[in-house]
Image 1: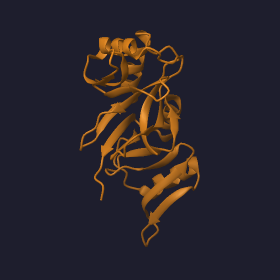
Image 2: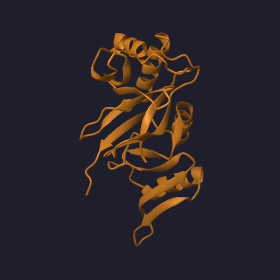
Image 3: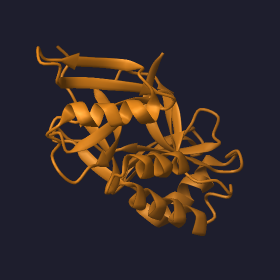
Image 4: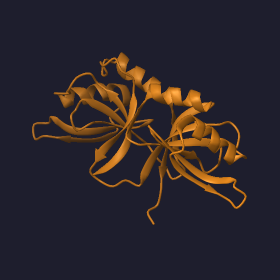
Length: 210
């Protein structure tokens, strides 16, 4: 089964009338997207385009999911922007659950060449990777992979811990978390404080299959 990391909002109920539910979303975000209807016009399945990406229901019709938009250069969405979206949906009474958003890998029908990472901006380009790796090991343990040069300096690493795998990004100015299964917004906030990141955001990459 293929999986994709989605931004998830628990609704607090099961959607029985998808036509009315979609109408409440189009009142907020317009009619962009796709919709599948029965012969009588009832909505069977839909996705709705917003400036942050595409909204759709999960397979049980209990969770509203946001699939981030993407481009070849990568797309970012900050945790603050997700909070704003959550607040909009809550004020419109589309979300009725008293829970915050979270990230979770959801089953999808087709393979995707896109990946989402939780990024923690460090502020400056990392010059001493050995020191950074040791700091992460002190926080999360020795699980993962480390590569060193002949002098023993760390030149690449991945640290494995309860939420997934964390590594330095290509530009060496942010740490990226590849989520194992699920992580809540509060857990992301706590992790950002541990890592002393100056900004937390989600980034979606599109990559080419070799």
